[in-house]
Each structure stands twice: as structure tokens, then as C-alpha cells.
Image 1 (cartoon, protein in one colour):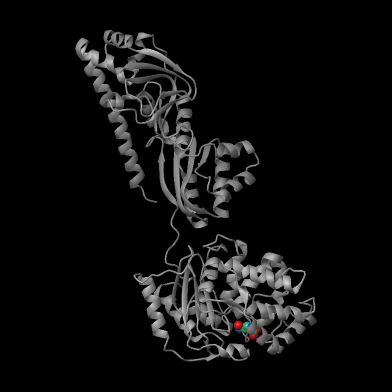
Image 2 (cartoon, rainbow, N blue to C red):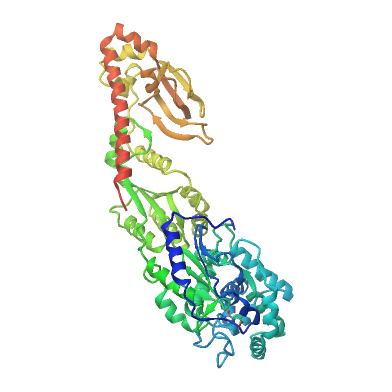
Length: 621
Ligand code: GLN
């Protein structure tokens, strides 16, 4: 079995080893003999396996020895019956109340004749009868196939054990006939009981059991194969009956001490599940009077205590999933803007909010986010919810966030949900809860919150009185590069510039080119890309009117380090390095002023980066 790993250095493994060593000498209890073949089991066999929800399996002892699943099959077949028929239909056949009787008791509800739960034999046989199939062969095939999905490998019926129980299982046959009498079973009962015998005789290891448990712990998805073994919504039904009835008459004491849904079988197997975290499989054939493996009980009790696994005292409370919030007044997009625009955003940007979410979004982690957004003073103009660091989102969290987005939109707020491409649940909720397809398109319009923020900034800047277009030579008065130049100096400078126009997607600068000029943007927006433009490259930043691009290589003469592309119609005034160098001799004052302005422009961008780093790293949810 490749999935079991050598973990000699791990303290987790060391603890399992010590548990195994501690309980191996325990020889209390007896191997089951009422199924004659089970009496042949070697009582000394003892294996322990733990499987995590990412599919890692720890093992110690006889972890690869095969034994028959017996009653541990019951919750899984119940899960298949739920998938086939739904919980309502199943409830008309089998209840979910602990019976207080032995597993093989002839225990049916006084009025309905229905078995009290699917973990006693009567309930299990009734459940097997609910598996949809045309023939008994097809039924057992479906059952074996279901177990194979949980275990992630093909499984077989142990013929010797099956035949042995088939020969001796009169009590179960009697139960089958009673179920037929009360019309819980509607077909000839012998075939169903026989299928039940086969399902009990499916052979597996405690490594398989652990992985099956991890699959239940993992919303029904086998963590190694990714296969859905049971519909996620039925996992809770299966684990609930395990919790209340899984350990026969010891179920109350078990959940009290161990705190995990579990199921045991007469062959000596025990499966325990810690929802969301672990599957545990233990095998040791000696049973106590209630029919539970003596060593397995000890191991599970001690594991639960030592590793603090009791489900009703979880080690952590869900954290608020807010990773970071800021307004556009505190932090801007990666667009480099003219100082006048930056000032405007600083003054007006309080109405644009970015909320970065993280982790697992469920009710308790999402509710504080909703509260926070709702409590924001004033009416926001824009809200960007960023899902980049979200690991998972469940139905209720999706619904709450989508409803919030819908209500904010109704109130006139622009809302963008970014980085949602790996969260199909959320996208689907948007489509089903917002009847207007256009509205859902807008919500998902931007992949990254940076682009969404850039758009919000552009919208905000539209409110600003448009600057009057300056006369030709005076045009550059307000540009970063020429700030502080006198009218005469401006005229000298402007004469050195040549005008270039570009269409959308035209390259202005290509990565690797010689750096011979810088570009003053006089119209439109240019994007700076690392790697292939538009393809798998990354748009690092952008520049708009009044700013300059290409000045880095312009200063140190190093080749161009990125691609710069026109986003729509763009006009630039191009300033050649040679002309800049020439100014040093002809107009040293202008040269110095320009040099200083380039320095200021770089310093401004560096300052923004520093501030970004500080905002992005200091906040805690
Ligand atoms: N096949 C066994 C029976 O029906 C299963 C019982 C059990 O594991 N508790 O008797």
C-alpha cells in the first residue's frame, strides 16, 4: 500500500507506536465465534491507522492485515441508501433512535414495525433492502463499488467468512422475515439478508478504514483520489447515527469519553471519524461483552485524550475571516497618477472600501465581515470583496455575501467580487440570486482587486472638475518631469519633445530594448507588463496623464525591464536620453531640475510601495 508512509522521525508516529506497545499486552476479551470463520482470527493481531483529510496515512502494527468489515459496513450502506432514496424516504423505513438493545436484537418499533436505527442488524438489513438495484448481484456490486470509492482501491468479499455466516445466520434471516412481515422489506427477504452477509464480509485493512473515515471527515470526498464517495449533504446523517448508535450499547459512554462518531464490527475493527480532521481505523479481534474490540476502545480513548480530539470541545473557534481592509484614501491601486489626482483620491477615497477575506468562509467566519461592511459609516461608493486568500466557502457564506452585494448595489454602491474563479459555489449563488445577468457580470468584471480599485478610482476622479487644457508649450507645466520650470525653461524643454500616438495594444516599450528615451503620457493610459502581454504575463502597474514611464532605464542605461503597452488611444511626448545629456552643457539648471523631478517621481513610487507593504503586512483580522 503506497499511501502508508515511513514516519520514524515523527512524534505523531512515535505516539502511535507507544500506544501500540502499551496495549499489545492487553489480552482481555474474546474473539467472536458465532460466525464460525471469525473464530479462526489470530487474537494477537493489532493494527492502528490514522488518515488525515489530506490523505496521509500513519500506521503501526498489523495495519495491512485484512479482516472483514462486518457491522462497520452499516453506516456506509446507510449513506448509499440515503444517496439513492433521500433522508425522508429512508426515515419511513428505518429510524435514528438508539435502541438500548444488542446489535442482533429483534428490535422493531412497536407501532410502525420499523427498526429503530440503521446500526442494529434489523436496521441494517432494512437499509440494504433500500439500495436501488434490479438484481441481488447488481446490489452487492453497487455496495462493493461504493466501498471502493471510500477506500480508493478495489475490494472483495471474503468468501470463507461470507459462506460461514450464510450457513449460520438464522437469526438475521428471522429478522429479515419480520421486516418482510411489517412490509419494511417488500421483496423476498432471503436475498436481501444474503446481500447483507456479503456486505459484512467485505475484506479490508485498518488503513482502508482510516481512509474511509478521512473521506467522511472530508465531506465525502476521498482525499487521495478526489472521488465523491457519498453526497456531501448525507455525511452528517451517517455520522449522526454513528455518534448515537455506532458502538452498540456503549454508544453513550463512547461519545462521552471519546467524542467522535464511530462504528465497530464483530471481526474486531473500529472506525472513528473526527469531522473535518481525521479518520481512525483500529483492528484487534478480542471483543468485550458489548461486542467492541477491547484494544481499539483503549486506543481511541487514549488518542482522543492525548490529542484533544473530543468533538464537543474543539481546540479553536473559527476566526473572523477578514484579512485586511483599507480605503482608497489609505491605499491606491498600482496605477501611477499625477500628484493632483493622488491628492483627490486621498481626500475623497474614504468612500471606496477594499475588504480582503481569508480562510474558510462559513457562517461564523463570514458574519463579522457582513457586520463590518454594514456598519461602515456613510454610504460607500464602492466595495471590493477580494477572495484571493479564501480557502473554501460554503453555501450559507456564499448566500450571505451575495445578498450583501445585491443589497449594496440596490443602494447605489458599486460592488466587485474579485479572485472568485476558484469558488464555483459563490459564482453559482451570484447567478441564482441576482436575476439580472448584467449585474452578475459586473460583480465579476475584474479578476484582481487591483484592477477593480483602479476602476473605482477612475470613477471617483470623474467627479473632479476637468483641468483646462493648457496652451501647447505651457502644456508641460503641470507634468511631474517639468515641475518648477520657468516659462522660458518650459519652452526650451518642450522643443526637445516629439509627439507619438499609439492605438490600443501598441507597444510603447519592449522588454530588452535599449533605453534611449522616456515617455510623458499626454493622453490615455499605458500598462506595464512582466512577461507576455495579455497572456500569462502580469500587469504590474499602469500610468496615466501627467506621469512619465521609462525613466528607470533612462537613468542607469540598463535595458528595458518590462513591456509597456497602450490601453486604448494614447499620446506621448518622447524625451531622448541624448537630449537630456545635451541639456547638461546647454542648460545645466534645466538639467538639474529635470533630474530632481525624476528623482521625486521615483521617490513617490517607492514611498507608495513602502506604504503598501506596511498596510498589507501590519493589519490582522
Ligand atoms: N455480520 C454480523 C451480524 O450480522 C455483523 C454484526 C456486527 O459486526 N456487529 O451478526
